[in-house]
Amino acid sequence: MPLNIPNLLTWLRILLIPVFAAVFYLPAEWLQPKLINTTATLIFAVAALTDWLDGYLARALNQTSAFGAFLDPVADKLMVAAALILLVKLDRVPALIALVIVGREITISALREWMAGIGQRKSVAVSFIGKLKTTVQMVAILLLLYDAPVLQLVDAHVWGTWLIYIAAILTLWSMAYYLKKAIPPAPGED
Image (cartoon, helix red, strand yellow):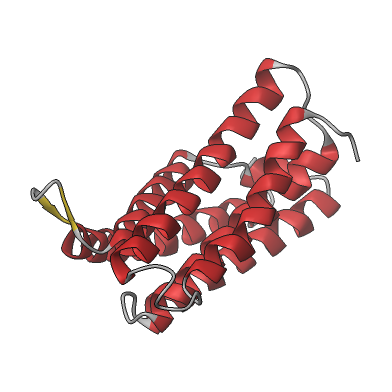
């Protein structure tokens, strides 16, 4: 395991997951509900920022590694799954939506591992639809964690709910896209 800045940021993201979850289990006298939501939102935002930053730094500093390529998506999936489980518990996301999103993440991770095993990982490389899904999903989760008006202009709960449904649709669309890309061409279609 190479010890470099991108990998340390990925480890930080993983270490933030229990801290993020623990905020919701603090005694009520420690933090008011609004502060719990704000604190959890800030922790999730920092974790999401490290997701972007570790990839950027790995490329910019030429510190990409097989270990980092493995660990980064694992950290992402754990972070999103933890947030969705908490949002279901808080009754801010329907369980079916969380199952669709988490189920897709597991399916596509397994697909990528299988495709890598047969030397075809590039055929299921991250696509625009996958990046769009991730962006919408992250914004939705941040809004649903915050769950209060933003600057008295945006109802975070309403917007977050709409966006999590859009993320679920994009999740299914991107899963279909990746599964289709993994199907080998019929003989003579090359």
